[in-house]
Length: 92
Image (cartoon, rainbow, N blue to C red; front, side, top):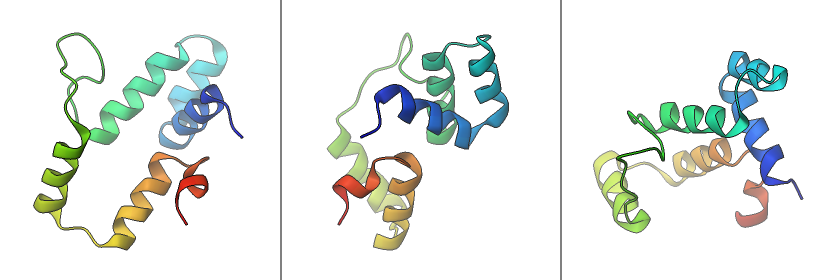
């Protein structure tokens, strides 16, 4: 089982190789790089920083489903991208 750090490193590496190299060199903290990657992936101005409000996941998920009407295959592909190292443990 992958550690949280390994999962975050893989996410950063996959999404932004340049940022990943900065993390490896110690120029950027892993958490900051991970937050930036998630911010870009989610299309947000800010990710879990100041002045952000955590919303109810179920409410947001329903809204996204209604707005985009994705197929099950599209949902699964996005889950695989979001959780590249662990998706197999919770999807059957």
